[in-house]
Length: 69
Image 1 (cartoon, helix red, strand yellow):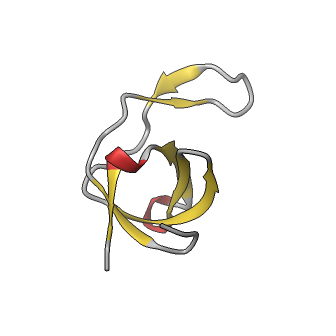
Image 2 (tube, rainbow, N blue to C red):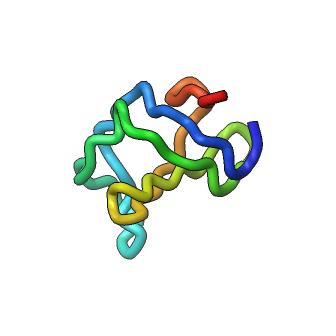
Image 3 (cartoon, rainbow, N blue to C red):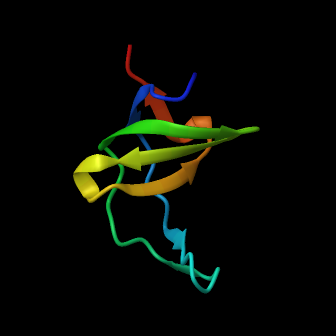
């Protein structure tokens, strides 16, 4: 996997992190079943951007998505 790969999200997280307060908040978007792009890789975490959801990004493990070949 590399930055720029197209992926399909196969898991729905329950929470996201509020960037201002650093607290967990309920997810605003349903990302399971959505396509996204890998924008950053840090160890075993992948930052996935979902352009169709106003550019929403979410950090996911590789178990939460499938790379589209």
